[in-house]
Length: 309
Image (tube, rainbow, N blue to C red):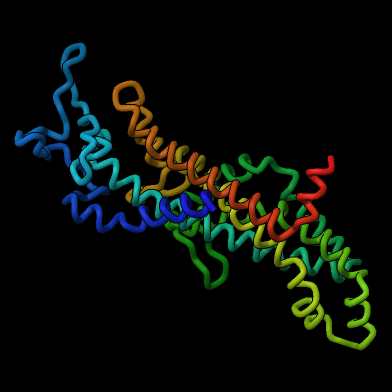
């Protein structure tokens, strides 16, 4: 329950990003190198003249810890880090959630077909999954991103431009299909031999009806458990790709891109990178705890096995 509440609070805070930016009077996607703010009645520049070495360049303002007034300070382009953090959270959740839906949909279709029909269909799908499984997941994600980031994807009437958020969604959603399809396939193969499925087959029920009415409801609990766990994994993958500049592209932002933006300020303004890093840790932790709770609630046998070891 605590994990669910924490997750909902993080999501709610991110959804308030437009309202926060309007209230603070900032544009988190535009450089504001000459902006000034009022602190204790005095005008303070957002970008301060550097006092180190020869005094060349500018340093962004430190966190003011005043909501609506550069609470977490500014980045190297004078943008409000708090506003960017909230906007970045929206994209991080959007990509992780949409990629999870794509992964579960693809894995369910392949797992059902492979486990139920067997034979040549099972062999063909299994070999396809083996090919994807053979690549280290991050290496495959990075390779696909580098290839597609410049030209996008065009599959028949469907076109995904290089700067679209759908590009990382597609890449992340595809690479994790084998990790979900394998367990689904095994569960379907077990259900295929169960008495109620054999009875439906004996009564002449069509395969589509058996899959939708008899088998799919019995694997739905496994899919529900996979939702928070896959969202956590997808969020980490998206952050890694965005940090490497091959995920979310400017002017859009995500927690991974904000960490990359703050890399050059790590020793002077560490909060620029630490804030999105902490947000990722808290969100992934909440999702994993929620996933464990769902597993224990929906599959009591797993809890018994763990306690009996």
